[in-house]
Image 1 (tube, one colour):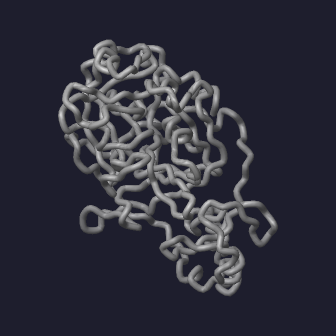
Image 2 (cartoon, rainbow, N blue to C red; image 1 turned 60 degrees about the vertical axis):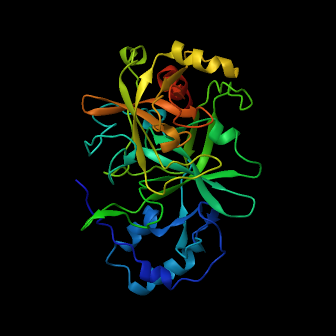
Length: 363
């Protein structure tokens, strides 16, 4: 069920704040107490929200805190504050991979096939934000939330991007990029999306962006803080168990989700979904061999139906399968035919089941 956010953010007070040092979103900063932090939206800064919730603090003190914490403003004139962020990773087990029922929960059950998602469908699907040489920013790859601190994406979304581009953040809980708050029906609105800064990026050590076959096309992005789960932001399950890793999924159907964006083009501002059949790897390999591409068992193929392909999704985005009540991430969008949706030519995905050990070793 879609619900409204219950958190009240004092935008009025922030509107009184000075311009500050005019940093960009997710830039490093120093707060009034001298602590290192990141320049983020007020509503995402737990330390400041806790102070505002205390009734013993006067309104004037709160206004002064907002003024002193102000660090910049987004391109659409939304104020940012310097929020102290701890970089202590804590115990290793804190960021272990979740298992059912704590992952892969989808709040919708709709027939899919190349259409819009619901507000709270596929709540693990994220967007990677880039800063370009001209100072502008944009979302051009997808990602999958796997726990409170990490998303999984494609290596080519990190290593095969245009010169001068820089990964600066990940957005979660997004649906329509044109709206600050997404609503589908009367009073059925999502929480505002959450933007997270990047603390660390780990690309598979054997990924080579110049290799046409794109082996080991996988990467992890670690946020600079934990993200809170909700109906609109929650992790997908990974095929951790041995039976899941070795399962033959050929002939079954998965769902690819994203905003139809790649490194060089755009299609939709609304999150889309498309149902795809997983294909036999050997047959798929035969299809690609004339192009000089040799596939490995660390890859999987899906699709091949005219007009239905991961052009309706994102590079780096998820291909998931429903198992009982939980969704599992089996594929990461890697590459496909020059003309997406070509009949008889499936898209190629990184097989997540083959990289579970690598993922666990690097989080």
